[in-house]
Length: 143
Length: 142
Image (tube, rainbow over all chains, first blue to last red; front, side):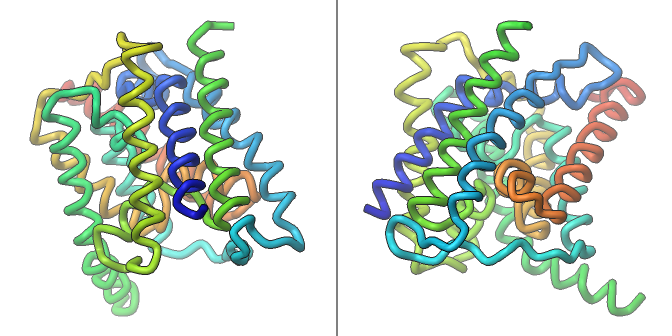
């Protein structure tokens, strides 16, 4: 059951990324390029995706998930250095290539070496992240 | 309304539905960087199969659907492998340090009015915009 739900969820996510145009890096970069031919599509995608999730979060109150597990704990309130520095680094990479983790995986079947190279580099970055994060914490403590 | 915006909205609804299924079904937040990242750094052995099943759907559904409904869609990823590698490393490190990306912080975080999700989204959009505008319009590199 748990695996079927995960497969179904991933399939919906992949179909949505394909249909919305978000696997096309020119549409993502078109959204970020406010001084070029600005493309607002990403805002429609984000808005459309938030709607079902608004309902879903409301349904979690006082219940358990279908497979019987607890829902995630309430969101942490604190905005820390890791959140801001990490998001800035992520944004820089996103702007450079126009790919974020979801579309990078969803577009793997489109062909071409670039997508595989991006995925490998992203996995390498994820592998390095605990070390980089620890260095960031040390720098913060020293300052 | 531009037809591409309508497709964006429809695709977005499917993405949100995927997130709702993952949350209400398995009690988990649908974040692409977290699901993949836990596999890469070995921090998630107990949920290994669930993550692999999710990724199989995420890769497999576009593989099946694209030839049928949208064979014209391409990634248009740059041919400059140096930029692809640098971008991939930045995305990998950044999303794991920030503990989320466009799906986890953006879609799942904003919809529960999480301050962290909103702040992360503001910062990665600003950083992405500044990076692209500098490299494309000021330095003419991409």
